[in-house]
Image 1: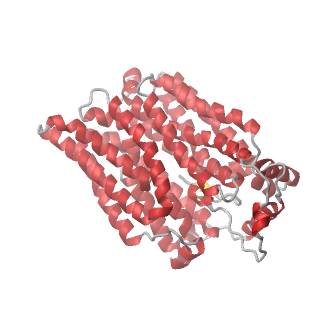
Image 2: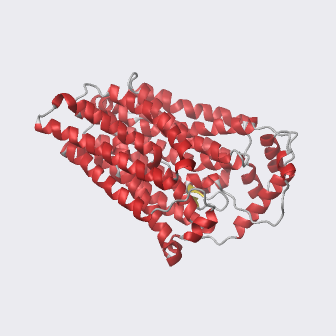
Image 3: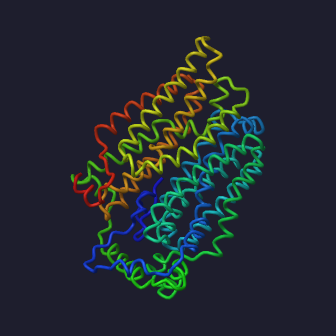
Length: 479
C-alpha cells in the first residue's frame, strides 16, 4: 500500500504520516505557549474514530474471501481459476485506487475522498451480494479494491493532519490496528453467516458509519490552508482543539510548513536511481518483496481452504483461531516497535514466518506420505497461526515505517509510488497463484514460502539499518 504526499500529491507510505511535517525554524516556542492551550481532544478523537471506519472497511474487504471460498465456489459453480481471479482482483483495484488517491484527496478534500471511497465500496458490496456469476462478482470485488485503495491514503493522512502533535503517532497506529480488526471480524462472522449476508453486513456497516460520521467532524485544517480557505481553516483547527484553545502558534506552523513543502522540487521516479538514493531504494523495494514473498496474501485470502486441505472438516475452527490471534499480536507489535527496534522485530518476524511455513509444509508432506496423519491438522493450523502471529508483530507494518524514514522529504513521493507498485503487484502475484500452487503441491507451496523466509532473514540482516531512536535527518545522513 502506498499513499500520496499530503501537500503535493506525490505518493508516500502510511507510516510516513506519523511525522508528516518537518519545519526548520529559528523561532523558539516556550513550553508555556505549547501547554497552556485550555483545549480538548474530544473532537480529534471523534474524528479519528470516524476515519478508522475506513480502516475497518479495508480489513473487511481483504478478509472476505478466506471464510467464503467454499460456499461461493459451490453456489456459483466457480473453478479454481475463477475464484483465484475473484480473490486477487481486489489488489488490482487497490493499486489503481492508491495511485489516484492523492489527486482525488487534493481535489475534493479528505472528507470528500473518504465519502467517495465509501460509496464506491458500497457499490462493490451490492454487486457481490447480487452476483449470480463471476462477472458481477469480480466487478464488485474490483470496486471494493479501488475503494480501499483510496482509504489506504486518505485515512492515515486525515488522522495525521487533525491530530495534536503529541498524539499523532498513537492515533495514526490505530489505522493498522483497525485494518486487522476488520479482517478478524470478517473471518469470525464468515464462519456463521452466508457469504451474501457477510457482504451486506460486514462490508456495508463500516461505510455507512463513516458516511454518517462525516457530517459531525471537520475537514482537515491543513488541506483547507493549502487550498486557501483561511476562515474555514481557522474554524476547523479551533473545532479540533477546543473553543478555548490558543491555536495561533499551531496555525502559523501549519502555514509555514505548507509554504516549505510547496517550495521543494517535485521528484520523478527516475530521480530515485541517482547514486545517493540507490541504497534506500534497494532497502525499501526489498522489504516490500520480503513482505509479499512470504505468502501473506495467499495464506490470508485462502486460509479456510488451507485448513480444509489439511484435513479439517470445515476449516471454521482454524479460521476462528486465525482471526482471534491477529488483534492481540498486532497490539504487541505496536508496543515493541519503539522498545526493541525495527530491525530486531523484522528479524524475529522473518524467522517466525519462515518457521510457520516450514511447519505447515511439513504437515502436508506427512499427509502426502500417509504418516502421522492424526498430527497433520494440528501441525498445519499451528504453522499458519505461527505465521500470522509473527507477520503481525513485524513484517506487516515495519517495511512501510522504514520506507518513510530513510528517504529525504522531497523524494518520498516518488519513492512511495514505486513502493506502492511493487507491493500491490506482489500481492496480486501471490494471491492469484496461491490456489494453483496449493493444488499442485501443498507441501511445496509452503516450503517455497519458507525458502523466501530464509532469504528475507538474510536481506534484513545484511542491508536493513536500525532506525530506532534516530531523527529522520540522522537516518538519511547515515545512508
